[in-house]
Image (cartoon, rainbow, N blue to C red; front, top):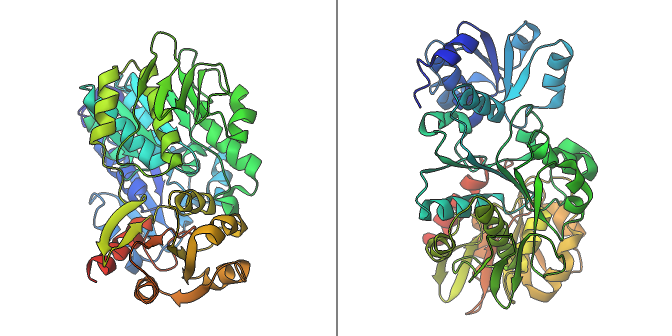
Length: 459
């Protein structure tokens, strides 16, 4: 779709004064799209100019940008577009003043809806853990069924950056975070997936109840005939399931519910959706039982969309997994190095530990997210040779794991890798699975994972 000269978009956006908050990927994508459809665009960024030079260079020349604060937000705007993670204290006052506030996800949805190009085969995937793997796997499944497929959202490509690639016949798979779901108002898909809800981002959401309800904003506009794919073993999915009007399809590793969905039995993933039953071998390149759940969610969603049986099995063979998610980096002196930098919370790291049988050297740490590390203790006792802590949270993790397993405060990722070499034996695993955010020492989890791989490949 060519948005540049579309009459509907010109009618709604031409000449409108719109302020974009934040100069991350989402903010830049939103600003570029808004300029393309005729809006008068301003950008406000809290960081000082010297810290965002590369981002500023990506903006169209006719965008006015302030840095070092949000003074522009005192003005009146026709619309404000907030980037994910923009504090509520920044945009809640705008709502009180009667100014419309959308997230970048909402903007992309509105643009595609106004042009009648929002895809019929549209899926949004959320959850504390597993979002990226499930989103990428679903994309592979739909491509194997000969769909023109766009995978976007929190997975790395903002929706606003790919609207010109999307048509009503396209399959669109979106990874969406709780931060993105805070600011949706009209957004909806044909199917929504909630993989799990475990402690994360509590500094932002304050309580698990608030966090879980934000995840279920995904379904607030979904109509009858849409699908909600939910984890039958997750207490929050069970508690909040009644908040959707969609047809619910449950997935679970053990068959306990006699309801439509998907379950795992005798090493087969089995669909029980009426008229769309079937059984498949699990994806061959994905480690861990948590990835069985991700595959089950993908099966239930794909069968709801009418994807044929063989396309799912082909995808399970061809799918190689996702970078920074239990990614096998290298074997060196018969020691396996695994990059799980995407594990930015305790529950995700617990799942990673459960994927291995023993003698693991675990690298933990980074920017603390407020959740206790005690849930890791049982698995660490069984499997960890040592815990190598890095970053701001290093001392806190050492304190909480004191007496449980040997810990060493290595401070940096390179020091942790080098230290592990003195302790490893053939057959051991060195696992980067930090249970923390990355922003104390790295740009993001991708940067952290890339640094780990560079260090390991340089051994």
